[in-house]
Length: 405
Image 1 (cartoon, helix red, strand yellow):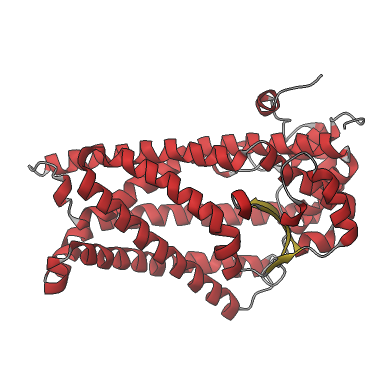
Image 2 (spheres, helix red, strand yellow):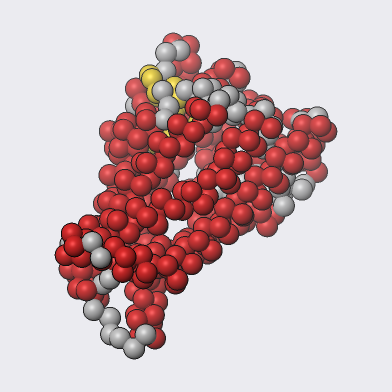
C-alpha cells in the first residue's frame, strides 16, 4: 500500500529496547565495544550538560549583574559614548570573548581529550586549537553582524521589531544555507568532487526523478580530524550537494554507500531543509516576542518605560540569555521533528534501493566507527538527540519487507 510522506512521518518508531533491536545491536558490537560506546555516550552527555549549565549561569550573571557596569565603563570612552553601534560591538566582543575563555576547559576536554581517550580523534593539540580558534572567530564575526543588525531593527522599527527580526532570520537562514557548503565548510574541511566512476554510476540512478544532480556529490575530508564516519545534505538551490565523508567511503561497501546516499536524497525529496527553515521562522518569532515582553517587564520593574529607539546596549546579554533559555526549552520539539524526518528518510532509502542488508550493515559500521550507543536512555533521546538511536533504526530495517522497492 502506498503511503504519503506524512503517513511515513507519523509512524510509531520501533522501540530501541525491542528484541529485534537488541539482537541487531549485539551483532554489530562486541560486549566490550558496546560498553565503550555507552561510556563515551555518558561522558559526552555530561560534558554537554555542564556546557549548557555554564552557558546559562554565565549569561545570567552577565545580563543581570555585569552588563550595566561594563556599559558604563565603555561609555567613559568618548568615541564609544557618542556612537551606540560601536559601543554595542565592544559590548558583544567582551561578552562573547569572555564566554569563550570560560567555556574553553569544557571545549578542550570534550573536543580533544575525550575524543583521544576513546580513539576517535586524529588531531594534534595544535591542529585542534587552530580549528577551535577559527570556529570561534567565525562565530564572533557572525554574532557581531547579526546582533548589530538586530539592534538596528529594534532601534528603527519599535514595538514590532520581533516580527521584522523573524523575517530577517528567514533571509539570513537562506543566505547561510546557500554559502555553507561553498564558503564556510571549506574553511574547516577539504571538499572535492567525488571521483569514483563505479560509485557515481550507481548514485546517478538514484538521483533520477529527484531533481538532485549527480554533479552535486562531493567527498568530505573528515579523516584529518576524526575516525568517525558521516554524510550530509548541505546547501540550498544551486549550492545543494551531498557530502560523503572519506571515512565513510573508505569503510563502507558500495551497497552501503548507496543506501546512505539514498537516505540523504530523502532529505532533498521531502524538502526537509526548507521545512526546517520555515519552522525556524516560527521559533525565532516566538523567541523574539518573548524577549520583547521580558525586556518590557524588566524595564518596568526598574520604574522606566520601554523606549525602543533608545534601547541600551547593555540589554544585549539579556537577549542572549533569554534566547539561550528559549532554545533549550524548544530543543526537544525540534529534535522530535528532526527524528521524524530521519525516520522518513530511512524508510525512503530502503524503499528506493531495496538494500536492507546493506542498510543494516552500514548502520552497524556507523555504530562501531562512531562509538554510538545503539540504545541510549529514552529521556536522553527525547531531550538531546536529533537522530533516532541506531538500535531503533536497525530494528526498523529488520522488520522491513524483504521485497521493498
